[in-house]
Image (tube, rainbow, N blue to C red; front, side, top):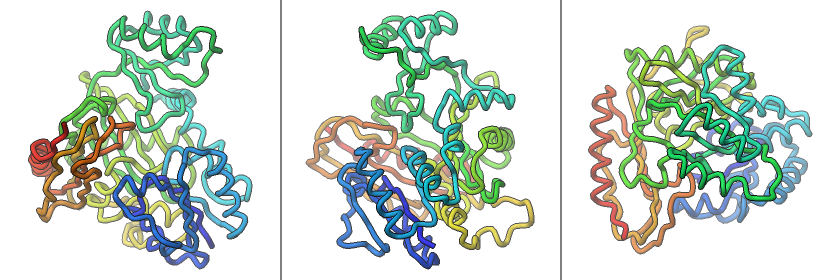
Length: 417
């Protein structure tokens, strides 16, 4: 068996050569040079421990990426395709379909990538979602605003990483946005989604499904607004909810219901975002059939002592799952501690100071992605970090205290002018 991995992340946090070492045909990896170098990693010489490593200069060259994946699949007799990034889910599904391989196929990917279809499926299952529309013209968007009021949220129908997401709060902001989104003389749009704004904190449930059953899942709550990534100069904290929190069982049950409504494959990682409104409703924002972004993967690893991507990829390739062998039939992994992440976004300017490396024993991960003298542009997407850390603690309260303290250090030690 040989796995092809489409990988637009840094290499360090994803040691597929170790995770999938039992595959007799090894791992063929297509990697993105900009993501490797952006994480201050060295681009490997040769194959870097893989059966084959191909590093592409431009992962945004769709034709090149498609042709490279196809050539490697044919050359190495690929038996499994792994794609941990949202942008590659459909590409991986098409490869599986072409070669008759197991895993998520195009029809199964679509409900997770087409946000309008996703919302229809969720509504049909009795799950509340934000009111939405697919405005083909500026007048359609104005009609939606008249019906639902402001603020409104605009996003790409198949977007990810908050790229292009815009919250408009005033009539003037709406008209400014529409002037750019619907240029005179252009054809009606089919790729834009408008949503009514949902107040409240954003929660997320992250986990892994194996054999059609959720075996790992836990909720967390962002302490910041995701869409503010280009305007937020401060520390952004996100951490897990306690087992005793009344929201915890509600969110876990809602995630299971949503996954069933969307019809995922037998084995996959997932990331579900849910608004908790001031009047105590749970409103699903989006659900993805791939591992979470930011450093949520490392948070789950700290919570369960099992890495979600390792678990999902081993399940997808038919390897044994030692982490699940001790579970009773139908049981799930239980959290052993609380954990969270603290993040600092990149912002325009010249870097004059970076944080001192934290050495506390509860720091599970730390990374800084700039160096003094470097000139930065504004963050391009919600995972464009200047610094990031994952911390753990026995309780949520202790964890939040540690995250806030390290965040304050980040704010004091990072200097950009």
